[in-house]
Image (tube, rainbow, N blue to C red):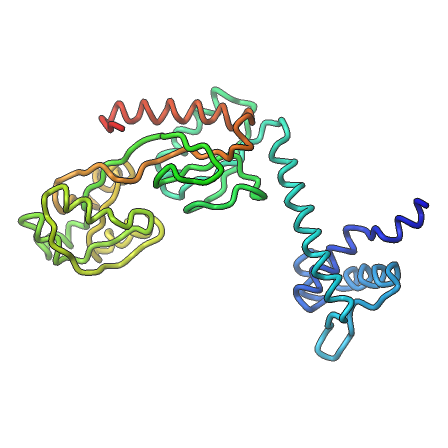
Length: 306
């Protein structure tokens, strides 16, 4: 009985090779994807066809094509392998070990979080952090991520969002741009090239409203990443509304200056986000306690109120 059952359980190596060839339509491409030789891929496919007793591919001058049976088999095997990968990631992510898989925002991670990580590691020397860059919401399930730093609102489905800090924003530009485009009153900004950030779509509207300015403004360049909008300012292309705590080096050095000295609390805030399934995971809980305390202390020192 056991031998009979094994006939219907091909090796995962053969299934992985078949899945790759089916998707890519080429033995050589599959070999590159799986870091194997083309001969090894061919042998795995041959063994699989022999075990099943059917032909899965037609060999042609142009390469290989799935047979009718192969197409049906490919769909089912592709779904099965995806399920296995997801279950394996979830099993790895929920094991009681010392790894913390953390998704970070690029600039917040580089400029605010990384200089403070040595403190966390000194307090928790057994924990190893694996960093991944994510912008915006994503699916935690199957990602292997234990927690994420999020900018926006606490509206991430299926998660626990814990407030970290607010941010104060101010319009900045290069000194040369301001010299060529003087701003004598805040309304003057309406006619300047103003940059927008994808994560803060109404930031300028809120900034002008805080000064009682309701006139519309022209369009401007839009950026996905904070680092790019800062580079655009440094290049003298226009004015951006950015968090002051993330551009302290540029303001201190004079590379950037305030186009108008008026700070406004951003409508967006930073949160630590954890999927509900990971709330009891030890390393993530330790990190949550640490970053919440660290962010609160930072806000208190910089007088950023919730």
